[in-house]
Image (cartoon, rainbow, N blue to C red; front, side, top):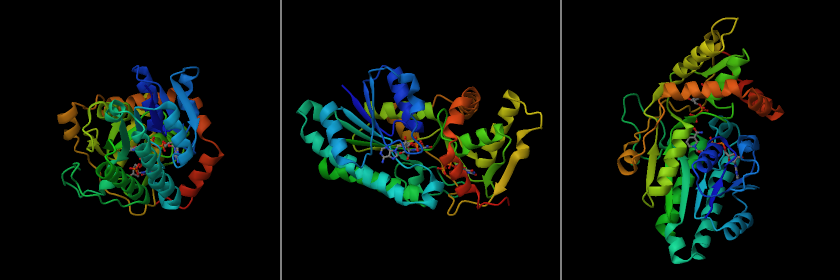
Length: 356
Ligand code: NAD
Ligand code: TYD
């Protein structure tokens, strides 16, 4: 038995593959295009492990996906592959449509045909798990109840619109063709191997380098934050016991304003690695806001707890401390991802945002 993981060299996908194999899961075929966000160093600890087969390729390459399904006959597909960064989707939405919409479509079509080639028992146990985001639900007013699975889809960025489109395709392939799908909609993750274009790792690496910590607008935007290991555990749970065709919201019960996150990281770094120049909070710099910036996300994760018994194991305090410590212990990983392409991204995204 094998599972096919797509996007397994990215932030969440690589954590998932490592956790899955550590928990003695079946062998993994890992299909990843190795875009700027994919990094084989994340999987270095699996070198020589025959349970991990890495394939460099695009989920939109139908011939390749067909070949992998025929060759490995996985009992499940777990789809992490995506363009995932809102700011990049604003500067260049095309890649988001290509991978998130067309790529998911290609995977669904390949899975549909593959399913027909399976015997009854294999067909009944086959699963297509699609990993999605809470951003598909749009922005919540202050005080409004958190997103349930019944919340209307109101995506506001090219990223969230492309993920919403992919969720709809997954739903339709279940209703129309009977594909055995599961969808998870998770809040903002943080933890090891997080590419430093997203808020938490960006603030950690900039603070360590004594660089400005860019806070968009007033910094009062709220996100729900979940430690990545808890997200991986939720996906394993849904894959094992989720009801077919259902969607499950996954969250940390942990709403925090961005400015609070940034100040928490500064305080932790000051404690764990004091800076002779003074407290890191001096580096906080308010910059021009993100266009169409969603004000608040909050996840109601009661369904997955009630039906499947999943709850996060980490609090924000334990998870963020582990995360900051991981970045302190992995300066080599940080240096390796800060390539020329990374510096070009910083120029493209922050060059035009003067301090406000
Ligand atoms: P990431 O950007 O770190 O990784 C994405 C991975 O997909 C990379 O390894 C990349 O090389 C690969 N990839 C991109 N295009 C591909 C293609 N066409 N074919 C094959 N591989 C391709 O993203 P992440 O943060 O790990 O997110 C993983 C999934 O989880 C995404 O679907 C994202 O929408 C979803 N999600 C992320 C978060 C979060 O906070 N990061 C929260 C909820 C849901
Ligand atoms: P991000 O990590 O990009 O995740 P998402 O946009 O998917 O929620 O951003 C998290 C929050 O942090 C979001 O409200 C935007 C904000 N932010 C900043 O204030 N400064 C930054 O440099 C970045 C990257 C994000």
